[in-house]
Length: 177
Image 1: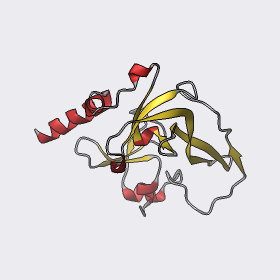
Image 2: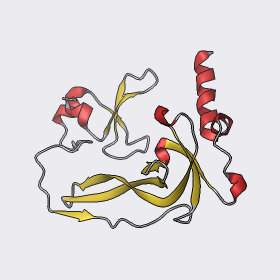
Image 3: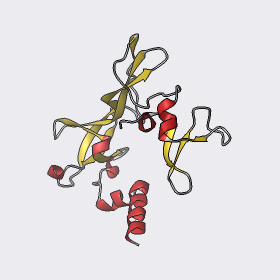
Image 4: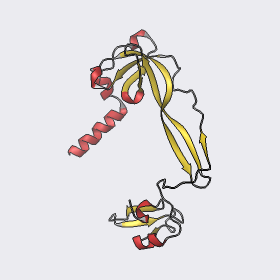
């Protein structure tokens, strides 16, 4: 993305009835404030702000947000977990819910203050003793076990009956038609 128009946070390309307009919202999102602009107008604009972090930057400080121990369920709860990797062959395992643990750091930059702000991105983490590893919710199918009868194995039918898998299957059917 080389041009100011492509990089500007106020420019929205491929707009209009035929998707051939560029809309500028530098003055606001209200209909009477949105302007249709050309690339030449964008190059001359003094209100340009990049939607990307562009270098060099002057950093005035770094703030690290505290990583809170949290979770949807009680930490230490037993779980049934079926990791998605082929090497697990669809097997279910007994696991221990550890809470939502960090999987990465997300950093934002405040243009006005020059402050970098670091936040932890989290995901449910389950320790699987048999595998001697932590498996994250994003790489598995899992559920909390409240009584011994709950541990029955996560079946393909269980997976197919989740609302988001049904939604995705619906999109597949529409695209086939």
